[in-house]
Structure formats: C-alpha cells, structure tokens
Image 1 (cartoon, rainbow, N blue to C red):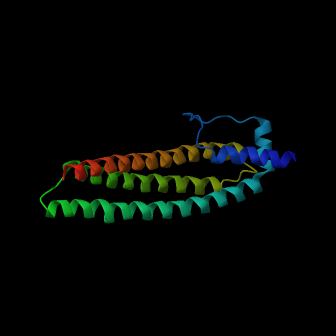
Image 2: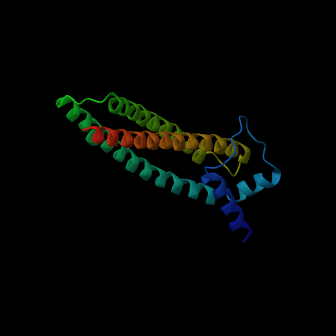
Image 3: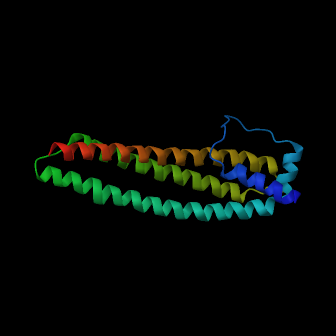
Length: 169
C-alpha cells in the first residue's frame, strides 16, 4: 500500500503540468530519495509509457497542424490571391502559424531528448540526479504545452479573420 501510494505521488509529480518552476535544482530529502530509489522500476516503466503516449500525440498533432497549414490556410490564401481578394491578415496568420508550428516541433524535440535522458538516469543509485533531470523535463514539457496553446490561439484568430473576410465578400 505504501509503495503504491509513493508510486502514485511520483507519477503525479511527473505528469502534472501545473507546477512551480524553479531556476535551480531542488535538494530532495532523504525520505524522497528513498522513495525514488525504492520505486525506481515502477517509475521507469511509467515514464516509458508516458513516452509512448507522448509520441503518439506528437504524430497526431503534427499531422493535424500540417493539414491545417497546407490544405486550409495555404489553399484559402491562394484562392483569394487568384480572385484578387488577397487578405494580409490571413497571410500574416499563415506565416505566424507556420513559425509557431516549427517552434512546436523544436520544443517537442527538446522535450523528447530530455525525457530520454530522464529515462536513462539511474534513479535507484542517483535519486537526486534523477530528480534534477525530472525538473528539466517538466520545464521542457511546459514549453511544449505553451507552444500548443500559442498554435491554438493563432487558429482561433485565423478563424475570426476568415469569418470577417467572408462577411465582407
């Protein structure tokens, strides 16, 4: 029971996106180090499961973002240009979306490398090193989340702009 509770707490620490970020490593207590060492196998297994799930999400989101850019934004802008109805806000929105999409890919790559390093860290022998890498990985995951939210905002703005263009036709 105690082991299951400890594992649950550590998993909650790992996947929680709403946490306070620190600029320096936090020294963990001996009790925390003991819990990390004792449940290392379970932690590693859950991190690998998280890695698989994140990879699937990245592929899914990447394909959706690519579809939106190439089949919706680009095609709409080309059609408007062909009909002499070009809209600079739509073109700007497309450019912003593309740069944010590239940033999302870079942020996800950084996060993925950090997660790989976390999984490779021997949490049984080096719980403090593991926790330090966990904090780094959390920050990188928050960067991915922030990139996703920026992309979502660009899409919402784009939708509003498209509706405005439609209403003016």
